[in-house]
Length: 287
Image (cartoon, rainbow, N blue to C red; front, side, top):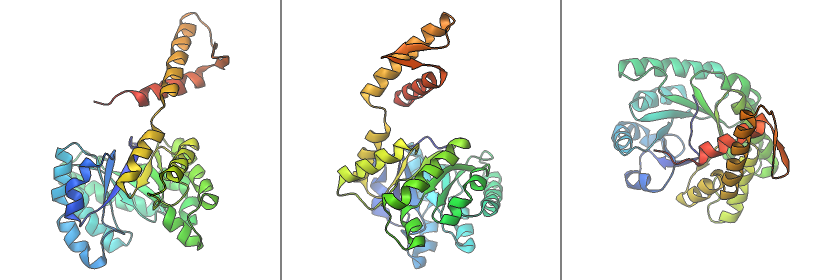
């Protein structure tokens, strides 16, 4: 299982006004947030109110994720509210222990069975927010229900007592991208602060760096960030044109029994052809 989205917009699970218009913002997927965006006293009410926006957004065809809390009592209460039709995945904060993720997965499986959901229908997004979580990436990525690895930039920096800058977060991005690719998962996150939404040129540079190291999507906290993420992660017209030439030349080479061919003065073999095919697949309009 992997998540095919590029832009993920956080929406407070207890903010009816924002929830009402969230589907109009243009995000590939929405994350209804029961954790940081909701005060402790408001969490019970947020859980009780969760089914209505999930059902409405699902009816509109909007992919929905829910970020749960990290403490076990809150997490179990969150699961009971969030495991339902229309939820694509649960975002698990402070992911550090593959065993804990397996316990969560077993709980989810029970609710899936009780509520008529396909087994394994709801994935997990492991939010890496500490050096310990980063150290255990391989074990975390191997948990069957995990569909994505994500970097929690702000909390990761907080554990080290520093700012969420490129100097700190470039390496975690690379490690997450590599671990995700090794296990066929999505890799979500940026080498910097998610709070940057006014200087969109700086934000664009940060998103471009994430894509360059293999990240497949970004967490967003403001609608202004969404067009930037969409633009950066989408193949450019030049990329698509190049990919079309490569695939055409490769197909012709294969038909004539050749294992390599030149395109635009460069050699093309199978890995290059497969990358070109992936670009064309990403550029194809979705139904």
